[in-house]
Length: 116
Image 1 (cartoon, rainbow, N blue to C red):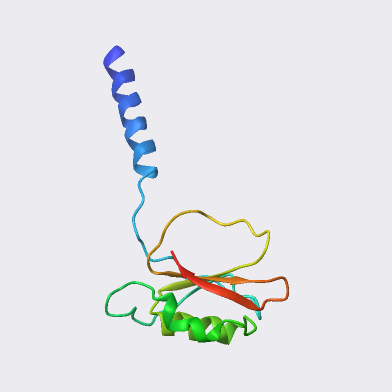
Image 2 (cartoon, rainbow, N blue to C red):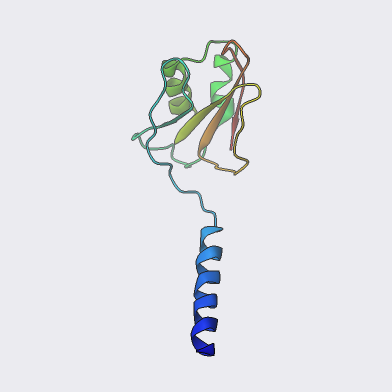
């Protein structure tokens, strides 16, 4: 009986620790809201390096964030996913080298692009 409870406890601890591991996994496809893309995923192949390059989309700063602009920025930066971050929006603090972050103001005008 004592052996069973220890084995069960160790198995449960192993499962809990496995859930805390992190890896750069591709995100599942998400629906894109019109004119306000929160998270979008593309079936297109990522850039050769496999990472995002925010400098490649610096020319898009100052434009309005639309679904088309988000897709264009994602493609140009070589990112696998993109997310639009508005003021006061909650966001995860996990780092994903293949994600393009698009910071916008309250009127959806792009302020900056970052990767991660």
